[in-house]
Image (cartoon, rainbow, N blue to C red; front, side, top):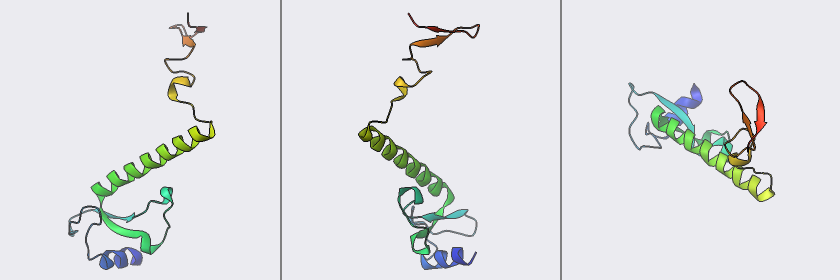
Length: 106
C-alpha cells in the first residue's frame, strides 16, 4: 500500500496512459511502464498509476506484442508452424467423421 501511494503522489495522481487526473471515484492500478513480459523491471521507477480500463487495453497490447515477438523468433529459428500446418486444422490431411472415426481426406 505504501508503494502504491508513493507512486500515485510521484505522478501527481495523473494516469500515465490517458493523462487524466484520477479521482477518488475512479478505479486504477499500478502499471509497469515497460511491461515485465517485454523486459521491464519490477521496480518502483517502472511503475505508474493507470486507469483500469486503459491499463487493461495496454496489457492486452503488451501480450499481443510478446506473442508476435515469439512467433517471429520461432520462425527465424525454423521451429514455427502456422496454424494451417498444425493437426486438426482445415488444412489437415485427416478428418473426423460424425461417428468419431478418423479417416484420411480424399
